[in-house]
Every structure is written in C-alpha cells, then in structure tokens.
Image (tube, rainbow, N blue to C red):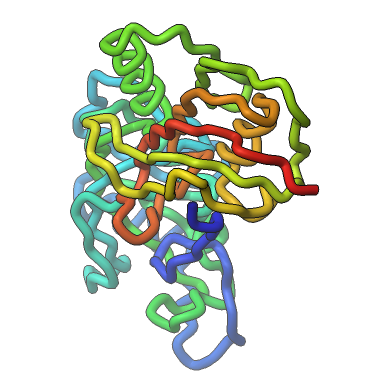
Length: 277
C-alpha cells in the first residue's frame, strides 16, 4: 500500500495567485464585458456575484455541487479572443478552482454546454495566475461542455453495482467507505496511528489486480496511507479479514497515483495480521 499523496497540479484553474502588478495588467471592466456580450450577440445572464453565463444546452443529467469532481471540455480566452488554454476531458475538483468557474459549472447539468464570462474578481484578481499566462485584471471567457457532473455519484453507483453483482453484505460508513467483515478477529483493534501488518490484494472493480502483498503481509502506520485504509482497518481486530470498497475521494483522488487512474474505486481483500503498537 502506497502512502496517500495529495498532489497539486499546476493547472489553469487553481486558485492560488502569485506575483505583483506589472505592465501586463489588463483592467477589464464590467463595461468591457457588456460590450463583448453586445458585440457577439450573446443572450447572457448575470448572477449576483457578477458572473455572466450563457446556457446553450442545459443537459439532462445530474448537476455538480461546489465540491464535485467533474469532467469537462473547455476553451479559455480573453475578451480580445486570444486563447490562453484549451483541454478536452480534464477532471477538476471544483473545491480547488477559481470562484467563477466553481459557480458557473453548477449552472449546468451533465451533458450541458455553454459559455462562462468571468470578471477578474472571480478569477485571478489584480495579480494574475502564478505562471504569468493570465495577467492581473483579466476577464476570462470559457466555452465549456460538462461531460461528467459528479464522480462521487458515479463511484457510489459503481460500488453498489459491484456489491449486487458479487452478492456482498456490505455496510456504508458516513464517509462513503463500504466494507465487508468476513471475520472480525479476536485480538487488538488498531487506532488511526497504529503500526499494523496487513496481508492484502488490491483490485479495480473489473477484477484487475494493481497491488498485492506477500502472504505474511506488509507493515505501515495507518496515518500514512489513503484515508479509506485509515478508516477501514480500524473496523477489524487482529486476525480479522474482509473487504474494503474505497471511492476515489478516500483513495487517490482526482489525480491518481502510478498505475491507479484518477477517480478510481479500489477494492481490497484484507487480513489484519497484527497490530504492532
């Protein structure tokens, strides 16, 4: 089991801004935005925050929340039409993106598409982004298509289907972890910081194995592994065994790790060999 790594990617939507005002400052005003809407004959709506949006197709699926992981296609450009970024099928955690994007994506259902016109105060403010590709004071325009509205819901549905297909008697915790206790065990129960030895096999929902320990198990501290393991192993006593079904937000998140793709559900057959402290 690899330690849980929370990785930060330097993508255009991350909210952190670094730098000082310089000659690249754009000072795009609301009047500039309104002029852009007029010039392009857009039927745009303004929210209370100052975001402008156009819904070409609302979509028919679920809509995301402010903490959803979504899959989108987008093209981003300035009011003068210059493109600063473009991507198809990127997965984003809405809790870590600029405010205008977070608000705007929640206006669409899965399958929907349209335009977001984001004033600088809902984007990168007076300082621009850390890479310097977006100057301070920039209004941003995004053409977006929402492919997947909420990976948490997709993970949940996939786990429930797996449970049904494999006739498992599984229990769900408040965090979204599912578990099966085949044998509770009779020894010591670990805490969230215990050093434990666990024999395990890790698979995806299709049964493909991505990791496996030796029969004697592998030792690690429970505060140094993915959250689903930290929580799940505390459900067993020494000598116990069962199954953990871990959604992406309790595993390797929207970034994945090594051979584990982003937003993956992980299944572990586990045996708690010993609690070592």
